[in-house]
Image (cartoon, rainbow, N blue to C red; front, side, top):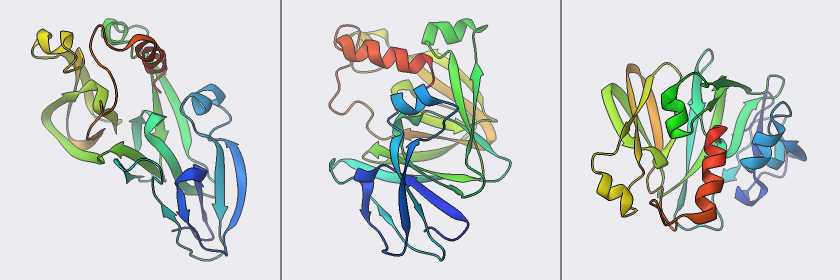
Length: 223
């Protein structure tokens, strides 16, 4: 829902139905301070919708039957580490766009081993509209949880984050799992991930080719 104080930025192909009263124009980049990240994540040439009174707009994947849409609410004063490759839209204040900052981890050996040298941090208040194959799941980190690193979309910025090698190296060699798992811990934070991250993709040490090289480059920059 969009009202007089909020606006919707969304990929045009995901806008399934819209109220006639909304004003639409084009915003070429999600954040002009991060032009390359906006382009690499596909967040460019977005449809911007504003309305003077509350109006409803339906966002859905009109091309992929396996993709489902979820919404991540970021309250005032909160922040999440987020990989924008899953982002398809943002609901934000019309006069206070969502703020994005970056965090480099050049001094971490773990970051070099996993090629996670930069994180992008999204600050509230805002709502992120995200997509995931078979949906996006949210879980509380609690005393500690680990998931396949390829599935991770983002996590609360206050969580303790680390990596661990997958339990069986043979599963990586055979393309069944990524080499590293992401670990999260913290009673007051959540992490979220794609239900089926490898659908239609090749995995493993020999199976990804140029696609794997491209993914690795985007991973370095937190995209």
